[in-house]
Length: 328
Image (cartoon, rainbow, N blue to C red):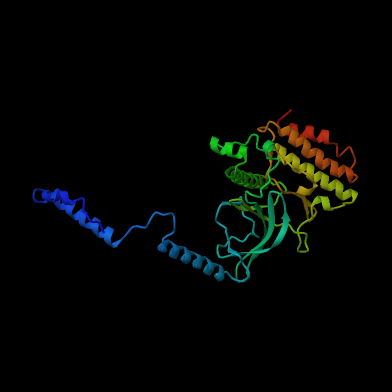
């Protein structure tokens, strides 16, 4: 309690005008607050009230997890972040009452891990499988080859650009967001054009939810690198691949990291995956170089499996794709 009221020196004003009355009321209110409602000490420590609030929040979080049905680990995140392009596929569960259940890990990588997720209505009426691609936290992220890919991509704030260039913790977080945003945008664009890519369901932060491509027996569709196709199947897959690359070239794009490990074969159809580093062939000064490398990598794999040289000539295909992209 204060030993001296600084407003006492103004008491004489109360007999002459309203200023004194207002000041007296303010003084009483201030004394009451100081005596009855002491302010928290600013020592950097939590007050008891703050501790109680945090405990309540933790209890609410635990209760929310307990209320989840079965083995679900979260309620559906549909409606948050960016959603995939229209029309939404019929198989996709969009009800907000659905829950997500994690079924296992599909793939681990340097930049991201891919998990298998089932999203379904708790009563079992509908469900769908999704691949959850989660870019790793900044202390594990290893975007070791991103400098060339990011040419042609810029952010407005110079501070952010410096942070990404210097690979600070803040910059690595920005890079992860940029990579996930770029991949989701590329998949949405290509899927809308009819390109052979999995449907991009949604993006929330650095998590992408994608259509799960299965092998027909409950497992994931195999990568091209895992297969040893017969001659006729090899030729068919090559034609599918060149058609996909040509479609991307009409949009001025190339995969950027194309290999037999970034291609799936789903029910006989070739599907392109892993496109966070998709390159704008025109805007990126090294765009033609990335396109030529994509073609050389994938053509080399087909040639090693017996595809005739007249079909798998990388120089001819590269020239054709550059011409298609408008770069004579």
